[in-house]
Image 1 (cartoon, rainbow, N blue to C red):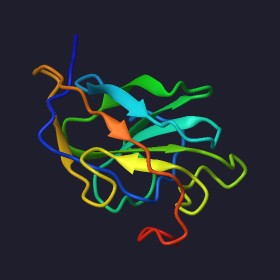
Image 2 (cartoon, helix red, strand yellow):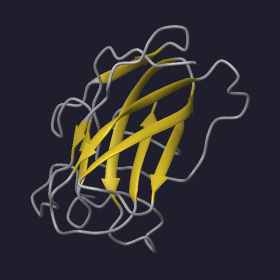
Image 3 (cartoon, rainbow, N blue to C red):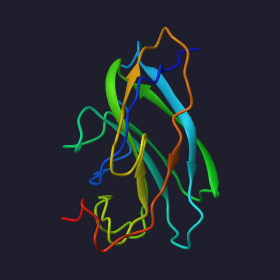
Length: 145
């Protein structure tokens, strides 16, 4: 079973999520963990990995969970080897192109919301949990567009 090794990673505020996995992911890894959110905003949970922070373009890999629980386990398959940032959000408005809007969508990252940390994915090594706590939407978020 391929697994991901976590070295330190976190999240950003601009998840332009599209359900995808990279092509040719034969040597790809898996990133897994728990996303915690106890607020009132509802919608699909999106967990995505990006090669940079702040993220640009489409994610390297992602998973969408339509009806997430308060403590939602996730697994993202097809993650290419290397350094990634793991970001998560509740998509409160799925008609907005799946982009993260910090004044509307709860969001978070591995590490912390304001200090994302990177994860090193190595398919041949074990995986550590990449847990994320989502922050409530904030009109004063440093990530607002």
